[in-house]
Image 1: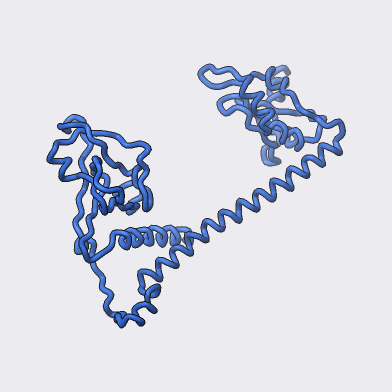
Image 2 (image 1 turned 90 degrees about the vertical axis):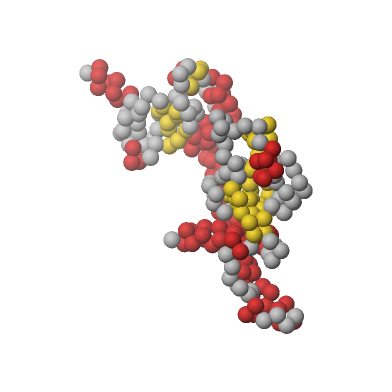
Length: 284
C-alpha cells in the first residue's frame, strides 16, 4: 500500500545518520540501536545508503565547513527550516578510499579523547582549588593559621570570641525600586548583578529616582561591604574606590564594620560559608 510505503520513508535504522532541518539547524548524529526502526519527525531527515565511512561523514557534517553551508542555506519563516534539497546538496570533501577516511576518523577520535581527558583534568583542578581554598579558610577561622604567631606574641588561644554581625557594625537595606513612588533626581545604583565575590562589575549600572535625603543616607563610601540578599545570598564585596555617586537597591545589605573587625575578614568568612556549603552538597 502507498501509505505503508510513505510511512517506511520515515522509519530510521541504526545504520543511518540523522540531520535536524527545522528549529535547531544542522545537528547531526548516529541513530542509536535503541531507536532502530522508530519513526522520524518532520524536523529531521535521515541519511541512509551511506557509501562512505559513516563516522567520517558524521564528522564532516559536524564540521564548520558543513555547518556554514547549512547556515547559509536555510530559510527563515516562523521557524528556521533547511530544505531537503539544500541538505542533499551539501558539499562533502571526500578522500577517495575508505581506508583514508577511517584513518581520519581514528585520528579525530584520538584527538577528541585527549581533549576530553584534558577537560576532565581541568575540571578536577578547578574542583580541587575550591577544596583547598576551603581548607585554608577553615584553618584561618579556627585559629590554626595564626597559632604560631599567637605563641610568639604571647596571645592566648582563649582570646578568640564568637560574635554576631550585629555586634560588629551597622547594616542597612537599600532603596526599593518603585517607578510610581520614587521621587527626586536620577542616580546610579548597585544591584545584585553588580556584586561579585570580592569585586564589583560596573559594566551595567542602572538609574532610579531618589531624594537628596535618600542619596545622603544610601551613598556608597570607601570601606562599605555589600552583601547580596537574593541570587547567591551572602556574595559580597568591599567598596575600595573612595566616595562615589552610587546608592544601592533593597536587594543588597550595606554593612559598615566598626573598629573591632576588618571588612576583608568578614568577607572571607562569608566566602568560607559558601565554599563549605557547596562542598557538602557535592558530597551528598
